[in-house]
Length: 375
Image 1 (cartoon, one colour):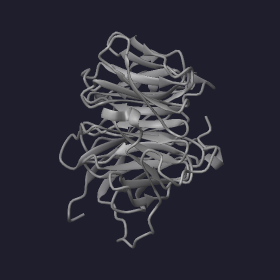
Image 2 (tube, rainbow, N blue to C red):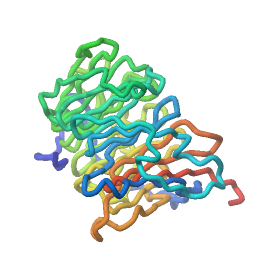
Image 3 (cartoon, helix red, strand yellow):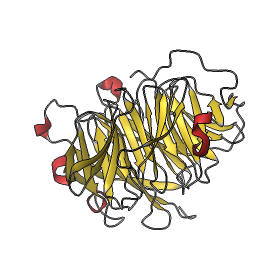
């Protein structure tokens, strides 16, 4: 799907507030308070040949033991964090190919656009959304599909998510709907349907347990819904992006969200007040899903880029605080970074990990630590 919207953004109430971007305010210069280093690189083997292995989704499991990736190669790869993350800060850079590093590989019937672990499964069940419009859950211990839901009339599912306790599932699709279902029912009984003004590119429940779900739409708006009355329409509609909204991610506290669009910006919102706080620019994004992830505990955003780089922004400043190249830039014949994910759990105070995947199938793991006052 082209994520470019087919019509102009709304300028009036559409079941909620539509909010224009604020004027830029002066702020202090951005500074990087984190020390990043590349820890692990996992690449396709030479035997993969010309088969595309582009990575479009990366997810840490809530039990903090596994990492899942998916993309157009029709595979879900499961990795142990013990393999990908260094044993100590002094560990040297490690190289693997996927066949060596991968703990388990699940073949899927269609190309994958989204992955999400079920939070109530103890790292055993991962859900996927695919290009055929189907949501499927897989048991990673038995390597089989255990649930399937086909309610989007064959239109591509761009995003799946689960409520914090796992009771509800949500999917967003090219058909312009957000569908909620009861994940405890064997047939995934539909709970409610919400509609945006275009294809739904992203859905996310409030990860802190609030009754909110955010959705990004190709009509250039981000919508916020109350899951207790989702069919009543959005409680807020956030308008500031110039093109499709590809990601909506909650920041810590649940009252702020970060959105991403193919206008080349991320934006921080106090959504309940309908106020845009800040816009973040530096990465390149005009046509592809490049990935965006918020490390809620640290208040920093990871982003891919069509320039084949990884960007990190601190929510306090509009300029990036750290940029790392993946290889050749796209205009030089290289790939682009299409997926990123922060490890929400931490191995120690002031320590974190960011995993990024490229359209060439290369997975890179970065570890970071908070700098001390003397550094």
